[in-house]
Figure (cartoon, rainbow, N blue to C red):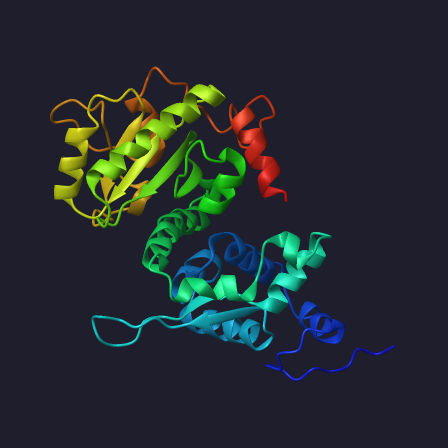
Length: 311
């Protein structure tokens, strides 16, 4: 029986509409849908850096996905004048297709259209974009460097599924470059929270390390050098492996030589992300990619992350 042709843009979600969309999606399109499911919202520029090369093909493909109702968009008000870029969110048809591929339901996928679009009016929208931008920089570098790999990027929601109430990082990452690899929790700081509240989070990370017997570095991505200096003065005595960097120091992005461990001596140069293991020689973090990968079944942290990513 031939599939009924559904006009582009018609917001119907019957079997014919979903089949029509499915026949036109590429593997890259599904990657985009997966990213929007996990990371809530990505701008046109971020999606270009992750999946495309030039602006025009990016806008054209996103426009097609939008007409197929697989993704939706909003454009936030800009306090600086001009127009903000489109911000993209998973659409209803996109959620249906992801659920079908996973042999599950949209409800079990954790998707609801109102919840997905709530980011458009959320006060946390800017924070989410900032967290995602951190990993977009890493993903973009990995696309263009054979020696760099973004081996894991778990959202706040994915982290909560794995570690529950033990700790609530903004994201988890695993980054390797030139044979060096590091796992880390990211704390993306916008300056809106008092430093006392920021430092109070460290107790949860210590509890997580005690419970799992795995000590994972915590990276603070800060909005200014003043904020960094003040934070470091408060956390200088902690036993946790911590490093700080300032978001404006983007020469090379977050993968570059912008990180300073709390164990750094006076005058020590900042380090590249992959080399941070040298800041904590008592931890076995300076592993080669062959010695420790997210698929290593001997590593309980990587094993549970691999299980989460396969869902």
